[in-house]
Image (cartoon, rainbow, N blue to C red; front, side, top):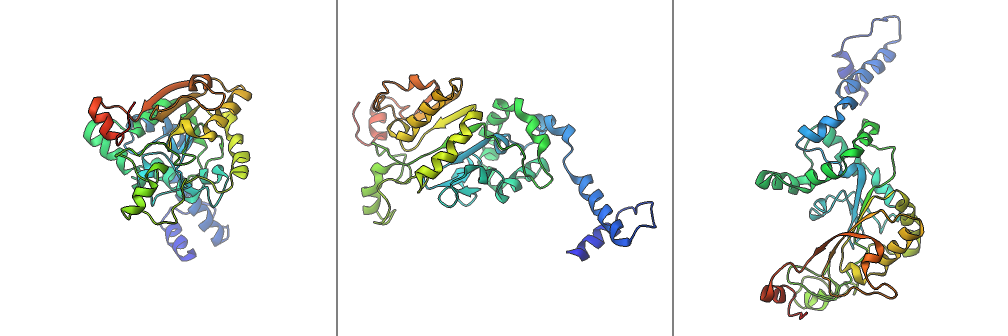
Length: 303
């Protein structure tokens, strides 16, 4: 390592003060080298307009699947070998916020390098000039100042997470043809019969194996939250979803933007008569198909 530093330092202009010890000159030259190639903060806002790889997601968002794996976003989650954390191994989501993998992704974005976990967005943009990356940049452009506090290696001193998408479990009452056992508990038996999963696959897959510890850490993130997306599984069947709504109401965060991906098979849970009580702002339904196509998609379910 030091030999490499000596080569790098030797190729740079030497400091004027030749009376300094040689090793100090090397240190200064290395510092100048990294400073030269570090992202310039003044260019941060330009990233939103001109960069083909920059995305606000790693500065504002975390996404977790029912298996506990944490990703920069839902699009990155389709590449399961590019997770940035694991809630089963560490209950604190904020640890994924500055994990080595997350810092590397931020660093890539600031230096114009493509990241493998962002492949889907690059392809979408080539096909239709639209992607989750562009949407994140639009929705969170007012937080681009966060980029200024990014360290040379991609670390972020600002630890408040503004947008969460936590799939608490795969609990679901339908086995849609577009789905699978990892996202719907209703698929388990048939998935075992078809050999897709083993007999030891749990009836319900949960994002954490220690809910009490996870919850204590999770609610600490909510005072700073701006947006939450609920999906699953079927979020309207999940107790964690309603606990989140109740906590947001309790702390006065009723201005939180809440969105859903739901099959709308139920709108009631205990004392909740409607998710509108929790401040739902935007809803996606997984049943956006007409007549017989809806019946086919939901695998024989009648409404």
